[in-house]
Length: 424
Image 1 (tube, rainbow, N blue to C red):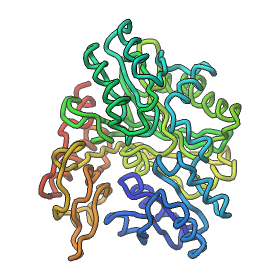
Image 2: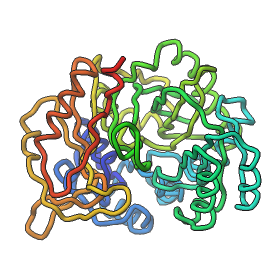
Image 3: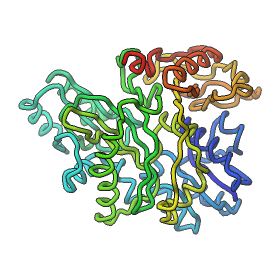
Image 4: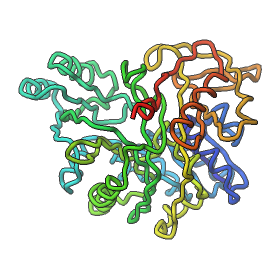
């Protein structure tokens, strides 16, 4: 079959790498892709939001399956566009992708259906939000309602910070229209865990757990980013917690979306906080997480294409997900200055080391080929250096060893991804 992947980051590289292993796939395309994806797929210079060109390309190449990976095209209706053009597409339709596209919607859904989450209020007016903060307990969390590249969440420790946060989101429009409405949420404490799942509208199958590191600097300091590294599995996600979440969070979310007339097919990412009062939902994503995908898919035994097709066809109950009994750690190599200001265009060296190294992967997030055919940096997050180990401590050591194989001009990384594991 001929497969098209929509996207061009580290998540899409990991998906492309896994899809390319399927014996069902004879030809793989990616739009727009990147220099790493180009090693396993034919990259096509079409933007992820250009639905007209994407569907025209699908017609031209007679594509059998399209995988829409990023949040923006999903929220804007990319899957709907492909289906209307007569193509099979993996991912939620627009009316279901709202689960991530609007934080106010997802919070209201959880409240209506009794799914555990933090207490919250929603505001369309900056003045009303500021007035509410005067009586609220600190610290507090401010969330832009819309999509903001994973950066529209502000944790405010003082009233002064919270006031500034409202101005940043609602008045200065740092994240554009995403901040027209904000959710003000109680601050929860505990361990964070990411759990990805496949959904076919009725059934849900849970993937292995992971844990992301969002802050730019060691010790969870600095600004929120799209993710600086991750590990899988999480030692904090126990069988007891899994059982609770299956009963009170996972299936109820799928059932709630169906009850609302928003049948969800695709991947639901559950961002969980393991509080003293039990697991609660921090956020939903309506797609694979980044960089969680880079550690989850290397552990998956299944043919990913078969799972995608089961989600589309409503036959996920026939699939048994299987994962290796090992561990994987991903360390993101970023451009110095990310997520604010950074330079691009530095030549990347050392990538050839991964070709002969079993259990080591490098997933490209922000790279491209220059005019001389060299791979150069082309983003804030450049590479996800990923390694397997018999346990998390071993995988972490392997990932940091491999991170030293790669060099580029303004290379930056956190040095404590997964360190909490060793501190147990």
